[in-house]
Length: 185
Image 1 (cartoon, rainbow, N blue to C red):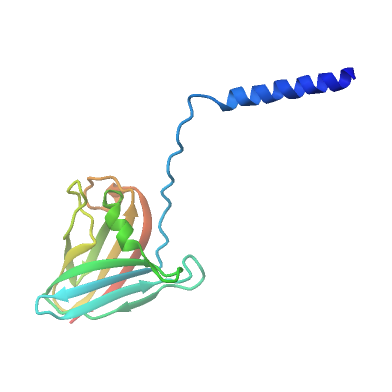
Image 2 (cartoon, rainbow, N blue to C red):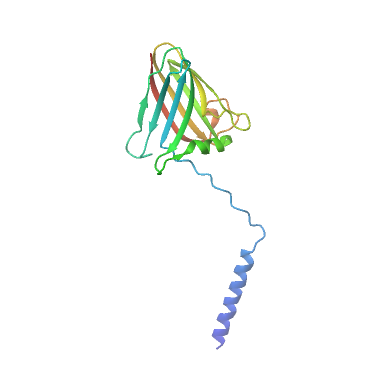
């Protein structure tokens, strides 16, 4: 009988101790986790001064799997200014999720970076986030004389803003990076 009474007392004290410690007033709401986006596809649409169009695309449906991305690239015209736009998708879902919408909504947490060489002479930003810092969903691209050039496009999540426009200064995490080798004719 005494053993049963002792057991009840121990259980009651344990219950009270757990209730008292779980009702702490310093509970903080957990921070929302902003996970990295899954991006399988990057599409670049370019419109030249004369209305000609070109597209560049990288599609990697197996992500970090063994297969390399499938790259398609249209030729560009020499000595031409192109207006460009970028679309990023997660095609592991059906229908495909348009990550571009999230990048726009969270523009203060994203930035595209452009690195050019050869016959692609420069790029400049065509849009900004709500604080006036570059975003890069729209941009201008200039080509030089005929030849080959490269265009590397990198999307960074949570870069330092403002930054000097380089990946080194940006910090953050890379959501997607692709280099396109382009023929300029």
